[in-house]
Length: 259
Image (cartoon, rainbow, N blue to C red):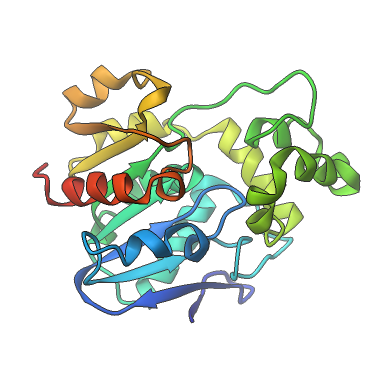
C-alpha cells in the first residue's frame, strides 16, 4: 500500500499499486466505492495488465483518510488526487474512472493537463442531477436530498438499506461526512459542467456505458468532439464488475485509439 499527504492538515490518500511499464494507469472509483475492490480483476486482465497501475481511493473513501473538515467538492477531490499523483511521480497517466470518479477525472484533466494523457470514463456523471422529492432514494440524489444533519443522525441507515449489501460493502468504509458531501457536490455538478469540460479536452477520450441504457444523452455532440462512445453489453452501472471481459475489451480498445 502506498500513500501521499494531500491536505495542509496532513490527510492521506492511499492506493494499491501494480508494477509495470509507463504510462501509468490510474483507476478511480465512484461514490461510496473503493478502487481496489472495483478494479483489481480488470486491472490484471490479460488485455489490460502490464502497465504500472494505481488503484487509488479518493479522500474519504476506502483505505484513504476520512477528514471531517474537507468539503469533498469535485474540484477538491481533483486537487487532492493531483497531489497524490505528484507524490507518486505520475505524468501523462491514462485515467480509467467510474461514475463520480469520472467527474473528478474530467476536472483533473482540465486543471492538471500534465497529469493526464487520456480518459476512459465508465458511465460517468456529466451533468448536474435533480433532487428527488423525498430523501432516501437510492443513489447520490437520494443522499443529497437530506440535510447533512439528517443524514448523520440516521439518514445514512436508510441509505444503507436501500443500497443493499453489495454497494454497502464499500460504502460503509466511507466517512459519513465524506459520503454526504460528495453526493451533494456531485448532484450540483461543476462550473463549467463536467460535460462542457469533457467537450473541450484535446486528449483521447472514451465513454463506456451499459448497452441496455440506450443512446447516451448528448452523445452526438460528444462524438463530434472526438469522444468515443462505447456501449457494453450484459451489464449495469458497475460495468467492470458485471461484465469484466466486456469491460476489459472495451477499455483496451479505447486505450489504443488515436484522439
